[in-house]
Length: 253
Length: 253
Image (cartoon, rainbow over all chains, first blue to last red; front, top):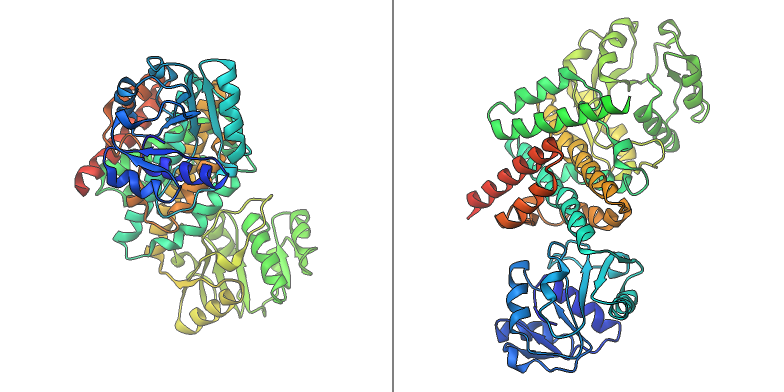
């Protein structure tokens, strides 16, 4: 395991629990390498020179910006070199010695939440078909949802993930801010947020759309814009999204 | 029950199952009144003149625009007249004969999904304290989460709900569109969407924010804007939300 952050930790723990032997955990600092290594029976290292050459898999799980440096510093190895990033193409690994690929678990990971890998889609891409199969075999041990996805598609999945994860979370933040200002506890929205997410597991979101914008209910929209008059930027977000939703309703009918 | 739509149906069924006697279901058409009335042991009616005057509660659960007309047409009754709307103030009921109030279950209801009212917040407001207590007593029979919320606060909750429900659902739609164009099945995002919603039940969304915008990762943001070049309006949404998220990160630090 190269990296000891959130993804490396969740992935390392899960692989370990599924019976994989994690030989080494490498991180910039010995201390962070140790904190992961100690719980998955691995040796902690912090120098490239310490990396053993005969592991089956070298999993690079670090911030996107750091991948390139790692690939250039890693010495020739026998096993597969793979990264776990959604946004970075497979090309970046071409400088590595032998077979390489991508092992991208499509999920948001938090320190304080357990990750159930069995339902997490793992997107696989590889330099050759044998490597592809090897990576898929490993992924199948931890997940029921293994997919072959090339770098182009993965970059689009990552963009879509920004909308449904990052931007959705920002919608939650705006909801929280509106309630905060009016001394209402955010937890009143928890069941609604949960149901909104559950609903589209059964029905596609286009069909699930409700609210003033899809009804083109100008009275309510104007009332809401009025409530946001002191926050012109949030007002602009409200207006722009509402316009788009209204347009999509016209397209449909 | 006045109304036989989604909210009326879910609410009517739940009250019925909790032992409340639903005397009548009124709807514009006899047929839709009957479809609900038949499953909750009530009589279906479609004329205002048929409304009995001695029920304890007259629950108006119709589209917002229709409430005013119903209030003006309903003849004097002895029980409480209440509506179930998030966006409409309590004032609208002032023309009704006696005590009145609001009984607003804060949730999104779909035909094909069961609603678990026990966890749905019910927001209560009333013309007087006795009515308030009566409505709260009824709400407590179906939900563990009953709150006293006035019309001003309720209007803000409704605005916040537009962000976390309607706009979030639109973010899902954009995610789906991006995948559709690249022949990737939307279900690959289901676990991510679910986890994004679950996460903020434990941690506030401001702290849960991740992604290129909060990191101010201009390289990835530019790449994403490039991918959206053929959809200037979606590009604009991406840009506007990313700017706001980036700003919030500056405010924090």
